[in-house]
Image (cartoon, rainbow, N blue to C red; front, side, top):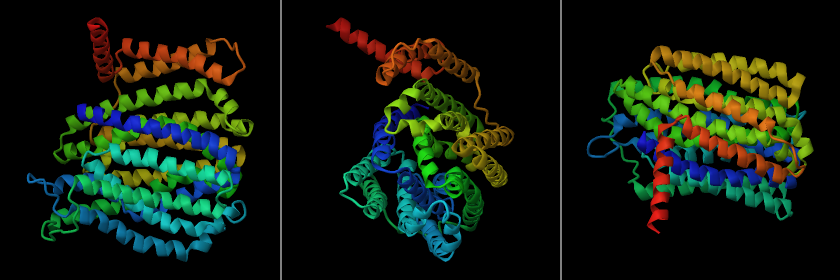
Length: 500
């Protein structure tokens, strides 16, 4: 867990620098300079490109992590791994991009009535698909090599800083909407190129490969695994963007824009989990290759509790300040109708970050085929709940649908993980953390409302709850790693003070 924890700390620092930029972009710059429809347009364009990208990749990222241990050897050679990493998505692009063009009229037919602006810029998703695809692949390759900090810096800071710049330029009318869309798509091209140049610095990149290395048993394993991943991605990828697409189709880009902004608040919860999962996934794949379920389960427990701790603490600070957030952001009264959206999405994300590593264990084990049945089952639930709740409750309905789907999906997934790979993330510390979070929220409601200034109120609440969080987290000994860091830091501080 040591290397995972150290790498995740570095990744988390980068994440939160990016989060600050992202929050400025999403909560200040976009509401100030873009209309609700334009915010919705940028969101749906990206999600459309990402969806097709996910399908065209044929599960290449998961396949890469799972089968990399089969390619590497004692001489530190990858036996053509990089060539095969690029080959599969190239085939996917050749298949899916023509399909997008052929079925364009059918696709945009779902959006023509409520989201005509999206129809106008639909063609831009084609270059976006290619840029996202190879950016993700290069980033995955870097993660496999245990180099996560720089790719995260590119993703979380570089991309967001460029997007922020272009939104400001658009706000001051230096760019037209078409130019803004062009610049936005170009950002992902830049990210792809820089990530590739980075991996060339720390590794020898070559397209040379030995066809004889992949014998029939290994080839069959890869093809079988990839086939299952593709069908899983069909449902899983669509499910992840289902609420956004259905809002755009049923309610229009205006409500999609509102949903996008409030969703960005809830998205803060999952930031630390990305670093932990990225660095831990290759270790899990290696353990499961050797049928070391004990090591994989210990990893699951460690990942789960630390993701729950980080995510739930962020949730506390979001929820105790939710009214202050809407009072501060431009046009906050309009976005405040998404208050309960934030709650339900936060709850969904806390479930996800606590249990999502279980899905990784299944994906990299010999029981990966279970994910196929699981994905189609959950996809059906997602479609039904969104169809029922969005027309009746609008953006709140979309959030409740996401929460319901998440709760059911991860409950079923955890049952599969427990039965097949004996993975159980729950410990007494899980219960301690839940009680701690409920207690902190309860204490917040007891704090007096003595000022109407949202900045002062946010600072006052955050300071009190923050101190209590740190003290109680340490006293309850929920995380040995966190307590060790606090103890070591305190010893260094005392040493410096007394040495002077």
